[in-house]
Length: 348
Image 1 (tube, helix red, strand yellow):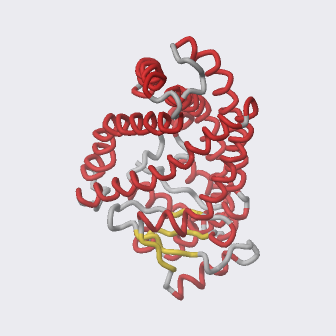
Image 2: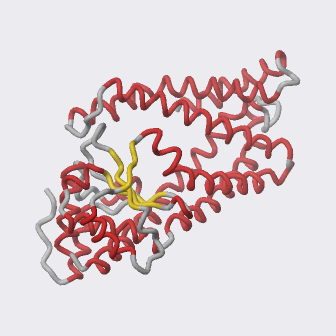
């Protein structure tokens, strides 16, 4: 709502102010607009974020994070996010102002380049800023997991412990990185509370993402959606910006309007994106069952995940369609029925 209000009411006023006071300094005007928008959005969202990510997590006994730890992580997010946002914004408007009518194609190509670079840097540069990451050092478990990587092309060295327990009780695992930085990250909360068989199943699921090349497929989908989104910005702002009082659609003060169009486009497409993600997760669940042959451990792992993370095991289908990028837990449990052993009662 604040983004829409800024775009409709404050943006045109800023455009007039910049024309009067900074007529020959478009870059300064752009960065001032971005700073004003970022600061006001942070003021609006900070209480909600504090309630949802600190107070609510502690109320349901999901968090180990101190108030100081939450604030420090927030500061690091501002620093890292601020630098990345400045680079992305500067690059976007460089394309917009220098390449003419085809700016949206150039911007899409730039987005792809940035995504590939950040995907490589995420597990080795960005993630360690927020979490401690160390090589998995359990020889017995490593040998069990090594067998699951044979024939997949995933480097056996790429198995790491992600130290989550300093701030959360939730268990998690992920596949991250591209090329030499590709690795499977297993949360220490998972490693300490799951049996070796259960860890094998979770690890095999993450290996499935590598085998099916889901990260590259996600990037491919995002390239198409980004191109369409930038094209809609180009078409929409040429009409909407003058109607709202902007001198031109590509003025620095119209940045909130540009972001609003992209946000609305992303909101409309989020159910489709979530459906694709759920399809990928089902593929990896089947892969884990087929690769390990451990249906009982699969069920036990997902029951445990649901209880540790306090996940709703059977949300309404509309809620799943709108918001879930993973299948609900009970759907994932039913998948194990095809592997020949009776399923346990659904999670309550």
